[in-house]
Length: 298
Image 1 (cartoon, helix red, strand yellow):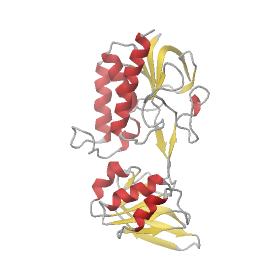
Image 2 (cartoon, helix red, strand yellow; image 1 turned 90 degrees about the horizontal axis):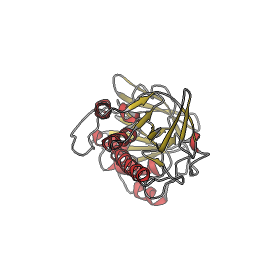
Image 3 (tube, one colour; image 1 turned 120 degrees about the horizontal axis):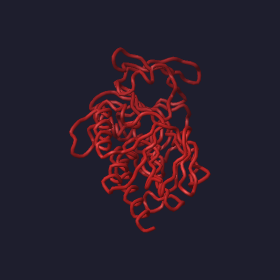
Image 4 (spheres, one colour; image 1 turned 180 degrees about the vertical axis):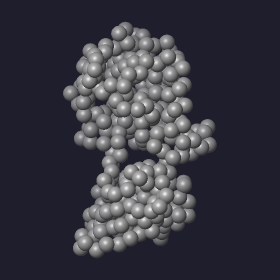
């Protein structure tokens, strides 16, 4: 019997483990792949309070080692199912706990075009607020048609010399207020009815190739490409237990509490306004504290 089982060893899950272990709780951390989550791919982190600059790998490694020194039990297994009685079933074992924290995160949707992975953190980014400041007075492009793409383009327009906003359709899905603001920006250019078909460069991204609906091909020389076509939360296996919204994000009340008593959520996989490293670790600490209170009152 564990006090808490944490599913996912990204920043949110590791922070939860940190707080729980310091509260002398028996914790099992389950991770399907490697610890660290998406942040491990970040070349530089420069918006985390108190740390001027650090690589994503070093940040994740430091946090993991901090938790490991406290004696966390971690197993690399794939969770298949959880029950309301707090039983967790993996591809190898079954575990029982008093509380569960779901910290499985969300994965960025990709364009799935040549060299997209090659230039990740070398010109390709999925987070404008994370990486935008690296492109001060440079030329960038944003691809997408929803609110995230429009907000990213607005944010970058105050940093970059030039912003191309590329969308595969004529009309945007995002709110008109963002679109109207973008139209007033002299350094923003719209490229509509077009798809990016390749990303190229040498060591770093240098240009992208675009094809429009008439099959015209055009190359743009840019320094950075921000892909804002959405995220996919990793919640499919929990949909028979916790409530999900239409996009698959876990619906919460009272910050990190799900509709099931004793099951909590932390990180990018639940409904929230901002998905950043700072909010992930915040969720982790809050979820751990809620779990401790929940366990202690029983």
